[in-house]
Image (cartoon, rainbow, N blue to C red):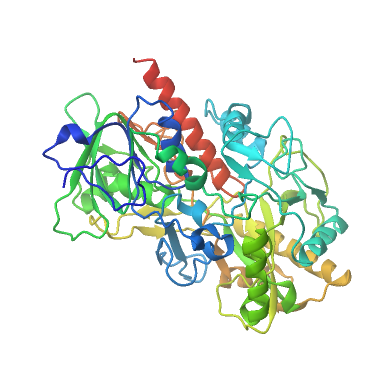
Length: 586
């Protein structure tokens, strides 16, 4: 089935290459993974009309009303949704709990169904990366890439962008009374309020208003919508997008000093195992943007990884690189929950058809209301080493000086994924340690590319992490008690039996959850670092030519915030690196 040139029609069925027509399968760049990062990278590289790019995405387009409506698109726990879900291995340090692993299968990736939060993280963490030897990764180096993509509607300052394609804004007002009560409770505990979570000089310990990637008329603005709109895909004749496409292996030329990534094998996602793969070749480079679960999976399938592990699965070793899949990090969460008035929660939509219809009409007509998914309008950030016995912070430092290791997310919903009473409202605090020391692994389940990888999240396997969660839970309980003292109607629903370390540890291990912030499984570090690295400071895979990675897997450590803005920054920086590398050779 020869390739039919269709740079614009991303809604069409995937087109595939005939290996007997190699000239038609030749591109300057091949991007594997059309998720949050891949859409950005494809857009930036094809700004040059002479550059050809093939973007391969295993999912579809799903350009529907449901996927543009924030509330409906975020309902990935229910019904048909463009994602793949499977179970982790049992958590050995959390009572053998098994958690859900989720990866997106849609152009735009997780930005098509996440909470839309735009948070960059603290400059201090990026500056720490630079002190660790990561040249070009200080906050001063990275701020221009944040600015380049951004159109900040609700905030201003030298550190914000106003001309980028990706808009973020605050909700016009608090849509649940629990949010101002949470803000007041935080202030009573000595935590200052800020309306700009991304201000470099802002307080590290804060109750921050969180901007979201939302259009002015209330539609989700994913990286697919922002960076690959029809105005781009219909005009760029050298951009080819293949959807519903499974990349099975990266091809390498191995005759030289080191392996050279030369092409990719791929199939229609719904093809039979016996169907022969198609092939495309890259003149310049291949960039993998599959995310922190699927990127190491593809590298392992292609022969890049720990020699013993590859040999065990009968895969030819192209490069013995033990760091692949070996430092998977995630922000573990523990949720405490209260019963609150039904009308002040998302549960009101489930229990009242009248309320649901009213909110739906409000969304259709004005682009406002609960269907804009105001799940997290503020969040509380803290430092565990600055919390006293009464759970109050004892010092105020700026984001330039330090970065938080605790986030408390107030959410007007039951967040434990347990079926809740439709006649009852719930309010939750998700307690998250932002700087985990523990890490897990991504390994092959088999050499079959259709088999989901074996994922061990590794929660609480390093000493110290659970102590931070204890402090986070104590802070959340103090916030809840203060909200109740200030008059907000709350009744305990799911909280620890007591305040002792032992009681908290039992509760934490019984109620552990993922926040789906997978990162650092192909970390940027030296190949033989204490925690082995996979890519160098230019995002090039160690020991292999013409192969880079651009997604959350490259973070030296998981960023102490929500990940979509940092991932877009990585894609912007990678595009710049590629342009500079190849402009110097022309």
